[in-house]
Length: 290
Image 1 (tube, rainbow, N blue to C red):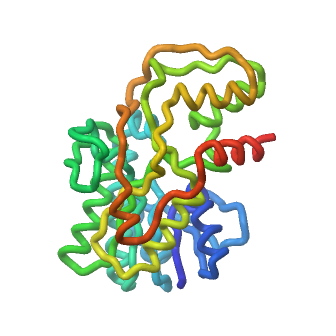
Image 2 (image 1 turned 120 degrees about the vertical axis):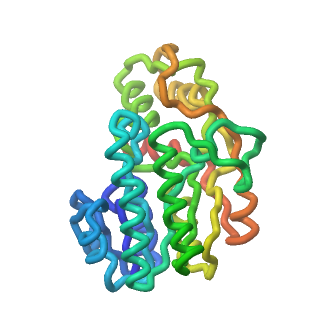
């Protein structure tokens, strides 16, 4: 399979690109930034239809991960998030239709907003309330509309909070680990009770490949590990490995509420479930930073 991976220079995209290549697929990466690794790379802009069309040409599948994925950047620059996450996805849809490609889209569990019931399954209402999750849901729906109206084969994966080697320095994992290793205090914003179903990049990469190889179109799947870990618990795990002071500060605007998400549908229909235990993945990440 010839696969184009948008956002392949980023944390998650680089994991997915390596996973596809390791499983025998011909990988091309499309990104604004140079890519580490031995992949064919096309430098371009998702908001430019001509760039996207040129990149998609010759591929069988597009794994669309490229986005403004930093929640706080999206909050500060909603116009940028809209351009990349919505217009960029529309450009992917048009180019994939022209080429006859399949698209697997990186959505997010955060599209649900405040839980009306838990665990939240794919039938839960979507009520996003932040430029990040609003634009990610809009990108998902643009692609699904192309599927329903024009026959574009699309699968959307509503991903859990991804972690693994190569995380951005401003991720909560890196902030906690880097500060603790330096002997500096760790500060948890708010009470730290906000829970996340942290899902390892290796598990997410496998989900993308299974979706790309499936014959399913129009499917939307929560793709999350079952274990809920609070930010406070994450901080305590880091402190148990690098003893330092644990403090608490004011809650940060833009943090999504704690929620439990069901991944039953993807297990039943695609045969996927998370396999990397959280603490194992955390120790792997720490080992890459030593």
